[in-house]
Image (cartoon, rainbow, N blue to C red; front, side, top):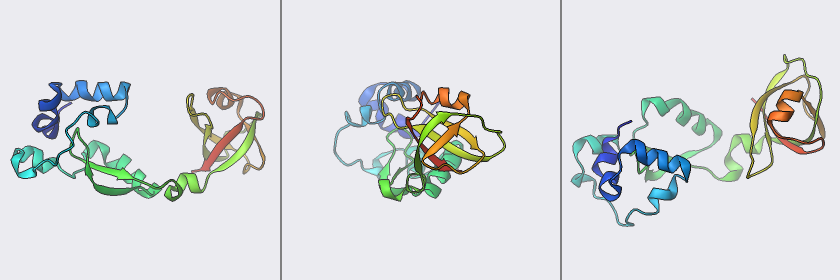
Length: 167
């Protein structure tokens, strides 16, 4: 709910408290405010010490997510987050583990014991993207049976493609 980096920088351009800026970006996109920022370098020595100390640091509450992304193949770059000064990550599509090792199968509803291997399943739609954790009794082939509840949660029709990655 508070960011010394935002207080030292972003607040002056947008006259918004940190929480409100985060809420706006959640409704639109993270780049919404960044696109409105001046495109000039920020001189770090001109920032208060509390803001300088945030630069490049991962917040303790974000440490686990940060480490998951690193294991997935993301890398830190030379930019920091506008809101909290933390590191930003990037990845090439082909370098992301869960994309590289994913499979696409045609889905249909079918029984599963619930004790099989865990997979992350998602539909292939951009506008109505859905993902769910599923347990499959056997590795998927060209066709995969999904528990009817998961099938419905993913908003699939019989024969729709489903992307799967083993966890």
